[in-house]
Length: 129
Image (cartoon, rainbow, N blue to C red; front, side, top):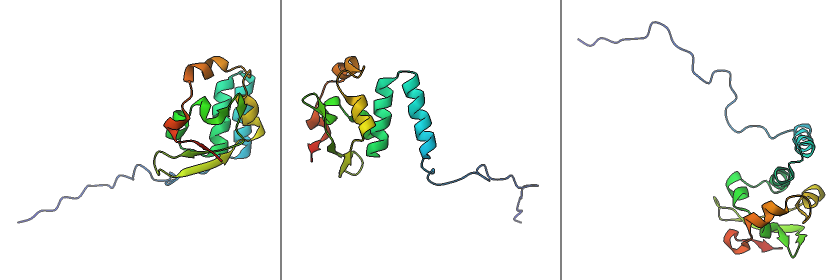
C-alpha cells in the first residue's frame, strides 16, 4: 500500500515578487550621483575606475586586470584602445570620454596609485587602435 504525503500548506517560493534575470542598467541620474559623490570625497582613483567602467562596459574581472600602461601611453591618455576580454577572448574596442581622460591624466592626484600598479600592456592583450 502506497501512501502519498502532501504538505498541509504550500509555502510560497522564495523569489515570489522579485525581478529575475539581468538587472536594468543604471539611469544617467544615478551615474551622475555616483560621480559627484566620488568627486566630493576626492576619491580620484575610484572616480577614474568608475568612469573607465562606464566608458568601456567591461566586466569587473577585466577592469581589475587593467594597468595604467593599458590606457596611458607616454604620459598621455589614449583616446581609443582595445582590450581582450577574459571570458570571451574577443577584443573590445572603446573610447575614453573627456571626464575619464581628465581623471586619468598624470598629476590628477593618483600618481602614487599609478606607480604602485606598474604597467604591462602585453599581459592584458592591449592594442592601440
